[in-house]
Amino acid sequence: ASQAFTNRLKNASGKPPYHRCNSQDSLDELFMDEYWTEVENITLSSEGKGDAEPQEEVQLKVPDEGEQEKAWLTEAGLATLFDESASDPEDMMGLLFTLTRTQAAAVEKRFETIRKRNKHHHIPDVRDIFKLPGTLESKVSLPQVVGQGNGAGPSEQSVSEPETDINLELSFSDQALSYKEGSKASSEALTDTDDKLSNFKLSRDKTGLTKMGDLSPQDMKKVHRLVLIEMTALFDTTGIDLKAHKAVKLKVKESGLFGVPLATLLEQDQRRQPGTKVPIILQRLIFHIEEEGLDTEGLLRIPGSATRVKAVHVELEGKFYEGLFSWESLKQHDAASLLKLFIRELPHPLLTVEYLSAFMAVLKLPTKKQQLQALNLVVLLLPESSRDVLKALMEFLQRVIDHKEQNKMTLNNVAVVMAPNIFMFKGFRNKISMQQELSMATETANIVRLLIRYQNLLWTIPKFIMNQVRKQNTENQKKISKDRAMRKLLKKIAYDREKPEKQEKPPSEVDSSSQGFIRVQAPQFSKVSMAVQLTEELQASDVLSHFLSQKSSVSVKREALCLYEIGGNIKERCLDEDTYMKDLLELNPSAKWVIKWVIQR
Image (cartoon, rainbow, N blue to C red; front, side, top):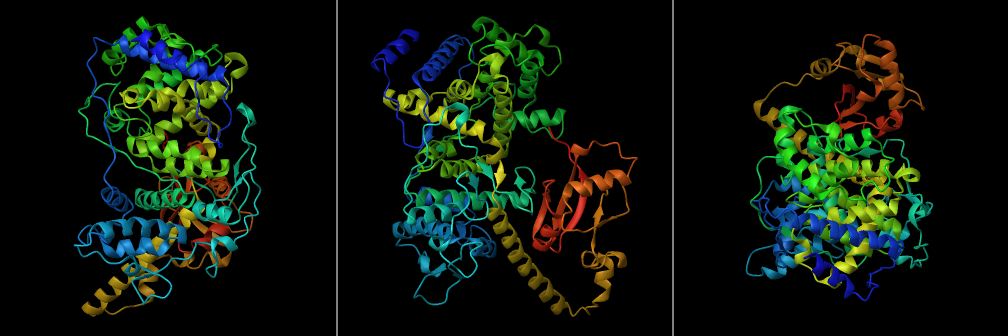
């Protein structure tokens, strides 16, 4: 098999025809040689496991046209459009009400495909869902672009922010449409190497950035649906046809460390350590590598001893959870090989079968900024377990790169070595041609480069998505309020205006913000609320500092505390410390402010 691999590379005429789409930074042949060396190491490692329990290969399936659109609408929370019994239509209407024009167009496109393929079934015309120009009154009017005032179209927006600023205020797909209609020339410098990648940064917002993990599960469900629609709209706007894959169900291990689904592994870890978000074995491998030192030359690139790695693999499976494994004897390169093995052996790819094609399509977008925007959306779509593990892995890889002067592992080195371990799930190479594999080599390496280099951007929820979540919550609250009013009317309950106010807020808290201060609660530490003076410059960090100065008995570290925005038009949100409280109060005047102790693993 090793000779067959060597012959396969020789057939590439010494200079593989790497597919370099015009949105990629260059990776020279020296770095790509490291990629193929890593692939050969993986192949040899797989051969050395001949006596191990065989693992079922991931099977890919592309849904039929129509079925793919139904699956997409269902995931987007819009199944009611073609199946009235699928979900609450009122909830669907709240979602539709928040969509921008490009997002609405993405929904219409998939809905029309289903309607045309099911003419014999009663499926309403898309104009019955959205009110298009020249049509009669319908359920929902065509949505205006969020943040565009009087309905100005994307082409009327001035995209004037610096090229290295990522605008989170306006829908990415609307920005892409503005770029397209403005006929901007693709004149970006696309040959940046290694550390010379553009220094993209997020445009700051006074109401604070929202990171993954900051929101409640209820709001995250809304985020997922909106992000799916937005990502599809972005690819539609740029003319990229995105085909989703579906994983065929596998027979997988139900216990152990390696080759176990992430969800299963986290479930067994959480029984030992509640709140665990990253598998304990992966945390321990990373800790060991860093404890031994990140200065080891060729870390991640030079493979460990195949014999030792195989023996340690077996020993870990039997002794890890009992605490009997001797970490002192584990060598650096062996530990790095085990870390890569863990990622590679996951029965379902870390980036998931469902979104693997979306990750690959990112590089087809015309500008680096649009590529990062698309990558941001795809990362947000990953299941929570995959997203958390990917984040922990990218943070570790960046720490390796931080020691490049000693370990000789630059961003390019690390990306090239890790790409086949992240993208090459079991059986992958059997499903593609040699030409496809050669073409995908630089593409996957470049995607890993972007994931590492811009990880501080990619795990952020764009503000326009957050605004849509707030708008949807407001619409849902209006419905709830109407239902409550109807129930009260039917029961003929006398409504006393003063009693509810006294029950909800003590007299000292009524209209506190209008009196120049906010009330902050910390029920885990004190039953008494804390008054904080409201000023233009007051930030969430100031509130936490004020709390710690007032509560000298609290022994919790500052980084373990978070100020939460709760209620109003959001369920629950952990605030970025740079959030300006007065600006956020204007955005969500009904919110309550609560300090909580946050356990992060």
